[in-house]
Length: 322
Image 1 (cartoon, one colour):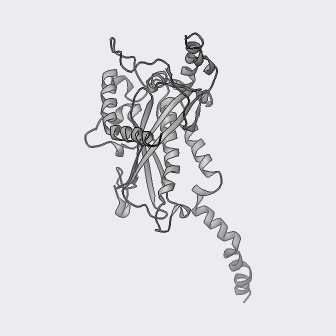
Image 2: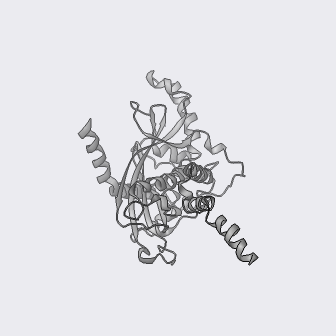
């Protein structure tokens, strides 16, 4: 009788109290508790920082080969085009009235995945290029551009396009795969895909095994004040690109002076490469020495053909309203 009395009067009220319910809900919605997004973003940013151009490009989160298309077996051999994998699940708070992941919540996952990719390929080049630009702007002929001397370098998100293919159910696990697909004189383009857990490793993902839930393409720009920094210049300073072939004059690395524009600023700024305290790694990036500049340029051009429709649409939409 004493045991039953204890169960009824002490244990059961404790298990079914508001405090217990709050703990259970918090555990089921870890992605959505206050400051969770900030912690996840900062964690992936710090884990993917590189201190020197010779540091390995994949310090954490080994990329998955599942984003590699059937026609691109060797795309993962160069760090610039190698995908990053983010594994997560749909929290209850992310579901909508249709009981699947709400469309708006895809972008918070994209923030984490894209930040990891951009941090990986743009550090420590951002800090190095910033110092070079200070010297060039200070000694240049453009007096208006000199106001940017000493200003911080930052990465801004210009736009994002997302296409939804299949629904993601409550508490369902999935991966977000992102990689750099190409770049031009101003923008670097990041291709992302939400895929089932069964993709590439044999794990069961139920009906979504090996399926693509959504795809996205985003573009980023590097700014120093209101001066645009060409992506190729930062990639080269980060140890991701070899020197150009002699006589190739396209895609120059010089300063691009433009008017100030709106953009979403990402959490990568000048000097972030100095944050890590662990020892430098003298090993070069995986497969970097095997790729010539011509091979990288060929893949960049192929990637730009993939996103050319998005680039054209983005410009037409802006022209429609301005």
